[in-house]
Image (cartoon, rainbow, N blue to C red):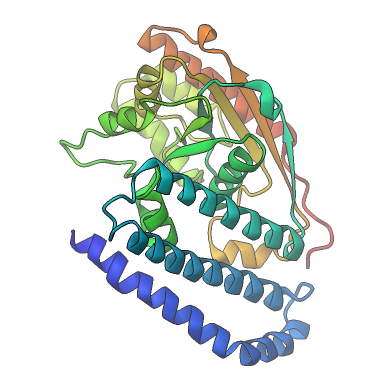
Length: 339
């Protein structure tokens, strides 16, 4: 409760205040950025990053104000989780994604290419979407693709640290979503929470989960392999060692979702292009980007998924090996124009 209060009554107002301060002092920021740009490597790197920060802060503040208005209009939150308001919040998320990706593509020179089933490949069928995880950028890109190209309303399982972003915190507490920790404390039944979120999917829903439990890093890969060995799963640990671009998947949440959504097909997603963009510092080093994000989708009909638990775990590992191989074959080349 204390953490929730800090997020809502300290962090959120601070973001609004910071946004107002940035806009009032924007001419000074622009002058400083323009003065620094000639002496900083990369073409207009400082101005590019400044504009992305300004856009994101502005989106945060406008969304918080709009959602405050929705809370007021819904009877001080009494009806905020009814389908009418849920639909409005999905529309807000979709609009935010469109604006942010439009600016990111324009300012950072990003292109996004998708390869796989067309948007009408799953008519009227709920889907469980399992994606590799390699930074916050891939989460935004995946949700953007599901909403804009595939016409889906995503239900997302994501790390609890993202709740410290005020906009994400508020909006995902008003639509079906769960903030979880990859390493729950004893007694926390996360699988039941995931199963509850995956229950009752309809034909335009997409349940989204990242089975790796966190962004890929070499240290996390080593810890994941060591964890499998501690659990006595030597064969899985050996298979995980052969995967060099992904973490060993944690099957518990995915299996809970499968059981809770017996009519859903499974869509697996791999991507390249944002693999190393984990922090603002990473974005800074990569500017200007000139990057192409490639997303590969595979659809697996429900009838092709094993029923036995151990066979399902083996099936998930086999897919993660396939995703790892795809990433190896489609890794982007280093851009030659970056300095």
